[in-house]
Image 1 (cartoon, rainbow, N blue to C red):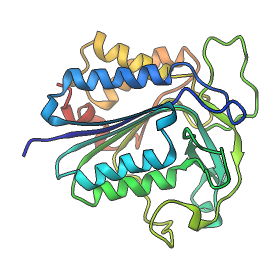
Image 2: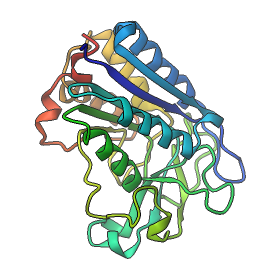
Image 3: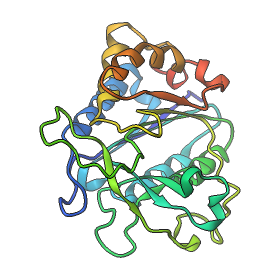
Length: 267
């Protein structure tokens, strides 16, 4: 059976203005990643789900990752791309011994915070879903998070060239049974597997899709389709740093960082 690239691409510009300010470039770059995957991967080797703006609800993002878990086969490549707001929420006691600053990192979905019970998508919930994908056998999993989790309370400069992709409010602590996953939620079974590219370090703010812009530009300009994750990040790092943020790879010392980007599926 042919190796399949199973990708979930999420881009959110439009948020309810009474919740968090909207962005300008997340949708554009999410669709640019869609174009790149369609251009470089054979149609019979690409399974693609795209969630843009209002369709990128928490339940739809969860469903997208669950769909990958239900169809993935050994040796497949899985890719989760998110561009939009990132934020934080206070961690329940069960997580606090492992979480710096007693907070969890979150993605702000299209319907996050719009009603009681409409929570962000927490890193623990994402890790749970990633674990379910790996339960079906060894796969190559990569995520690219073009957002930040700084929770900085400083307001954006209205004259800034780009809006910062951070939601300032740190959400209240949830009960354990309010997290998506098997209940009772096992706080020890959500260690992330795979490799993640991050737009900035934890103490920085990510400007609206700067990381994606530079990645796409450099991959095409320098023919980096077969390059490793580390080579690609090293190539874009100087220009991204020049715009106020430091891209990174997690885990940095993993052998995965020296494997071809997306398992070589773009070669």
